[in-house]
Image 1 (cartoon, rainbow, N blue to C red):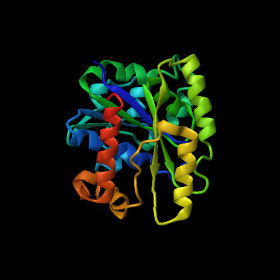
Image 2: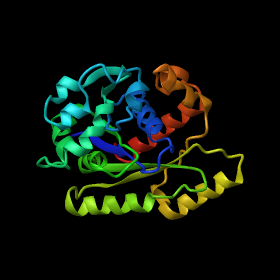
Image 3: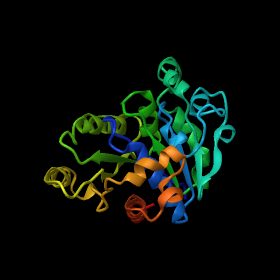
Image 4: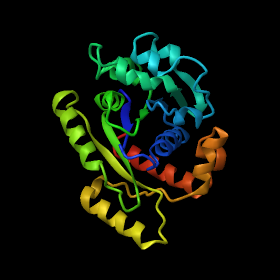
Length: 254
């Protein structure tokens, strides 16, 4: 059975998107699933956050342009049961260079297809925008996981993302669905955070994961050491939250 591809995306920056992509992927690895993490964000934070230099070699950029194969780019064992398809800052140029290419929206999916049977999950960290890189990720994905920060403007821009998902479902990827919504940076001590969480649950209903990711200093520190939360502070509240989130993802059909 081919592995499930999940695109982690929100066009609003600073919502814990990369933190979620990296640590959910690594949590699935800790639970014994074989995972490929795809860094499709030119900021390359998922790459550097796992201790890999963005300038070390070929990246998703060369893969999208057809200059290398998946095997040429994939880095094995960056964490337990986790391989990495790294990004580099030159990926910014892909948005422009893809415009004139054939099948520009589906090139990532075509590259990933042969590897699907070798993985239980392929997690794609998308840029905080709805450009061609995100379009490629959504065209390749089975499901979309949307991190939403528990703050006043939490749902800002989510409507545009949902419209994009529906358009892609109609035109490019009929199987695409919302895998789920995860509340991030939750501070249960504040009334605002609790109100936002309630509002998100009203809007998305059962799509909202029961597990919310708390504000946790260990989650913020880990990338600066080039480590996921399980190598850095597995028993932290952040680590425990992502393990519980991974169990929910598996229970939803992974």
